[in-house]
Length: 116
Image (cartoon, rainbow, N blue to C red):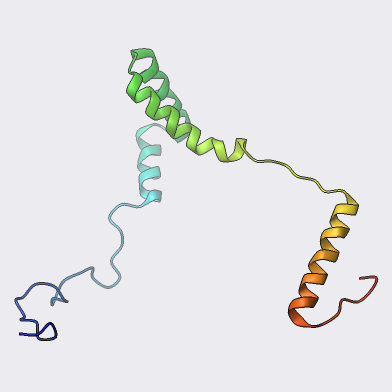
């Protein structure tokens, strides 16, 4: 038997009736989770619950769980804390514009217009 002549043994491939039905929806949705959380906590914000649980773990002395909360919270907020604001002077902006126009001219073969 060559590699092209594989014996069919009933494994793999499509099966009648398998898979999700047309129009079916996810069993668990984020919206559903948040709505249930809202009902169970009397409308308390998820962030408040997260901080309460973090403080409870820390007060219990559960170092491992406290570290997990630290990582979770830091991963969520670090991107906003680590933003660097860069401002260019007018001369720098004009130099970048000229460099871009020159590079574009070399790529396209069209000379940049003076004064633009």
